Each structure stands twice: as C-alpha cells, then as structure tokens.
Length: 234
Image (tube, rainbow, N blue to C red; front, side):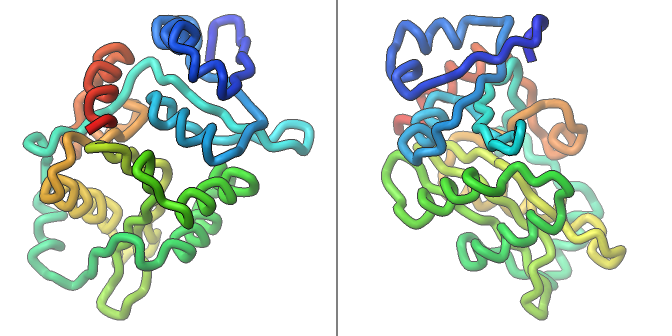
C-alpha cells in the first residue's frame, strides 16, 4: 500500500498509454490499484505489463486489485533447491504430476482451502473465461499433484505469458501423511518449466521463506521488469 493509503483507480487505457504505464513503473510510492473491470482483455493486459492481480470485496462489491509489486521473487531453474525430504518423495514415485487435467477441481480445492479466497466471484469467472478461450497472449493453467488413487493432494493456478510462468494461488492437503507434498508440487513444477525452456518462474511476493528455500531470488521492481518485458514477448 502507499504511505498515505491512497489506491488509484485503473482503466485499460491507462496501461495502454505508454507514458502513464511508465509513470506507474517508476512510481515508488504506489503498488496497489483497483478497478471494477473484470474483462479478459483488461486482465490479460495487466498480466502482460507485470501486474499481479487479486481481488477484494468492499461494501458487497468485488473489485480487481492489480499490484505493481515493489519486489518480486524469481526462480531461475539452475538455482532450484530440492530438499532431502522432497527428494525422498520424488524417489518413491507414489504420485502423479499433471497440467490442466483437473482445472475445475483445483478451483474447488482453493475455495475449501482458503478462508478468504480472492480467486472467487467475478475474478474466478474471468480466469475461467481466459482458460476456456486460450490465446497467444496468455494461458491460464492448473498444476495438479495426485496420489496413487488419483486424489488431488496439492495444486495451484497460474498463467503462462511468453517464456514466463506466474503463480497465482495454491493449496496442499493438511493431512499428516501428505507432509511436504506442497513442496513436492513446486519442485516438480520447476522441473517441468525448465524442461519446457521457460526463462523463469515469477513467484510473486518475496515475503515467504518457502520461496527462498526453493531457490528464488529477490528482485526490485525495475530489475524484474527488465527481465519480464523481454521474456513475455518471446
């Protein structure tokens, strides 16, 4: 948030205008913006410009909450760290790792896992609209980790733009027998992205230890954008 707690309204034309967008990039006093535009076109353009959007409900109305983060956690795949506990799970082979085979179930799991799930309502519908109408501008995907019985144990939703992947939100079973399966899902996803020749994985906010345990590094907004704006156009 800004120091004076001001959050500015954002329109599609604002980010299509290069001068306005550059001002947003260089404005070190603001990170959050808001809008009531949940159109696929607006969401896609926000994502391509480097915003990561969540949502918020105020006075019974849902708003999109695009953030031009001050800092980003970025994983370059040569820095991937696989802990001993995760490697043990990999060696067991008692799992199945899939992309886009249980999309709607992943969304349901997110609803059940998070007490305040921002990927809901109009935001969820926007994600579904983009998922069902893929384009070369953005691709919404679900990541799924299943046990031997095909039960969905961990997963996430994110998007691919160019040679980048960005995580939005995820879940992992809280049952004791699936300890570290959330970390397993992330390691397997990193290996998948590397094999598919992605440039890097955008993990969003750099405020959670698990991201650095995975091998991510912290980037300032400007340093992140220098890489992002090249890779999304590949």
